[in-house]
Image 1 (cartoon, helix red, strand yellow):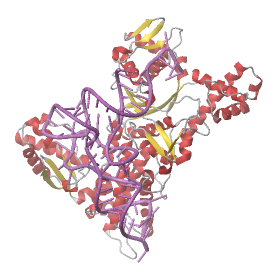
Image 2 (image 1 turned 90 degrees about the vertical axis):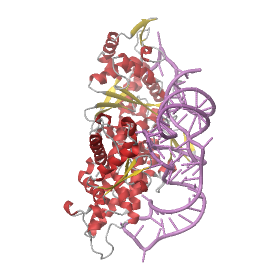
Image 3 (image 1 turned 60 degrees about the vertical axis):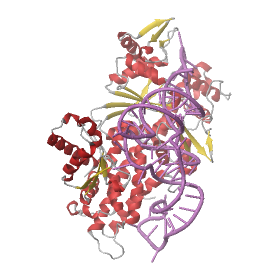
Image 4 (image 1 turned 90 degrees about the horizontal axis):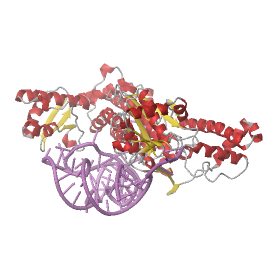
Amino acid sequence: MTPAELAEAVLSAAHAVFDARGLDRSALPERTAVERPRNPEHGDYASTLALQLSKRVGVPPRELAADLSEQLGRTPGIKSVEIAGPGFLNIRLDAAAAGLLARSIVEAGPAYGGGTALAGQKINLEFVSANPTGPVHIGGVRWAAVGDALSRLLRASGAEVGTEYYFNDAGSQIDRFARSLLAAAKGEPAPEDGYGGAYIAEIAEQVRAKRPEVATLPDEAAQEVFRVEGVALMFDEIKSSLRGFGVDFDTYFNEKDLHDRGELEHALTRLREQGHVDERDGAVWLRTTDFGDDKDRVLRKSNGEWTYFAADCAYYLDKRERGFDRAVYMLGADHHGYVGRMKAMAACFGDDPQVHLEILIGQLVSLVRDGAPVRMSKRAGTVVTLEDLVDAIGVDAARYALARYSSDSPIDIDVELWTRASRDNPVYYVQYVAARTASVGRNAAEVGLTRGDAEAFRPELLAHEKENELLKALAEFPATVAAAAELREPHRVARYLEELSGAYHRFYDNCRILPRGDEEVTDLHRARLWLNDATRTVIANGLHLLGVSAPERM
RNA sequence: GCGCCCGUAGCUCAGCGGAUAGAGCAGGGGACUUCUAAUCCCAAGGCCGCAGGUUCGAAUCCUGCCGGGCGCACCA
């Protein structure tokens, strides 16, 4: 019996109790959940339903709990129900009902943990979105890891997801990039407002190799060649380093396309129709203050140029017109000032900013080596890049480290910690379970132990305390995935995996899985192998959601 | 000045209204003729920043303070 099934049983018991007492069933919630108490004396699961309902129907909680307990006690698979404290229901499951989960998980395989809570939703996730003027820096990498994990979580919860990278290859930043390349090619120092770092010289050299005639062109024409070729090279490099990080996007969206297709005009028209556009001082303004922004925003400057914000508006509209119900933006903390205008912009289009546009803010990341923050990249100069991070700790550790913390908290990634092969390195701790379970599987095959037929599985044999705890941890996985997706918090999955890993190691330490020496194979050995394999399934599924490998050996 | 985020064990952090607030590290004490000790066990460690409020119940929700980080463009 899973926690979800148990919660259903609690709710149907409540319906029966309400009927018997002649209470108003509309006071009952649509769904309820059971908790997993920390204290084992409080049972396998606990329900607070009686406490929640007592006020609404005017029945003392313990009285309600007593009725619920009696009703629930008759449910098959439930061993006992006790009333505790002000009206908690402490529930214990039969070992057989609990143990059966091991088989269900193995049979479900990669599907275990998924759900349908977000079925029917079409969600756009935009992240990284760095302009191709340099390598991806460490702030963007946080979202590469978290955004990618989130896309996997949302898909596992049934949503249709489109991941997207938005970039600009025409703005003034790109001009600075092109001027920097030109300067490097001519052996001159980088322009005052340009980009430094060794990669500029590398890219300039690659452009010269590809287009040798650039050396003979006048500066203006040469700069244009450096712009076009340099951006292409830089962007290929960004894509390939992200791909090496396990992140690929469904769509790479170029701001230029918005201009070429007249989408800014289109967006302006739509905003005008909604009545939120003004012309003042020769510029075109969007009255975002109509919806709580602290100042109005310019769409088209008095010199006739569009603002970047105008493109943001067009891009948002484009996403909506492509059928996305919800546009999720992932930004660094240094961009949190955009939230107000973006929300207001959605409202100006007539959308509900609570529903159609969602902005996630991630606090900053730094890499720490020997107790001091790493500030410079060898190659990029002023910033630490994705490559620096991967070189320092590897892809698995990097993705795990970035996904393990709430995006609300700033993180320092300590190189020494994340490359250590021990308990205090969380990614090793979890991956070690993947390797250990695989190893047990290999050894089992060698001594002729197999799980055997599904019908022959004896779940009631999994009655050891550590087996019970492991089963309860395994049962939590679907709820963890659902919560992580709903709250956009992939770190919940990582924390869960660490907890599950602890439960497995303790099981492994206390419960011998394989027969020793010439010991005969028993049903208990087989039942434990089911449990071992179920754990491997969940660890692998969970790590996959984070984009981290589940090794067979370490 | 205004806005956002944070404040939980010595350190790094979990904890989407529930019972005695958890985990890792550091420091103390144990378990390797192993199914991979990359592990496990025991002990110790707390005005959950402060003050009010809502609630049967608050680390969690609300208000106000204090402290730290970040941001407030006809830049991109």
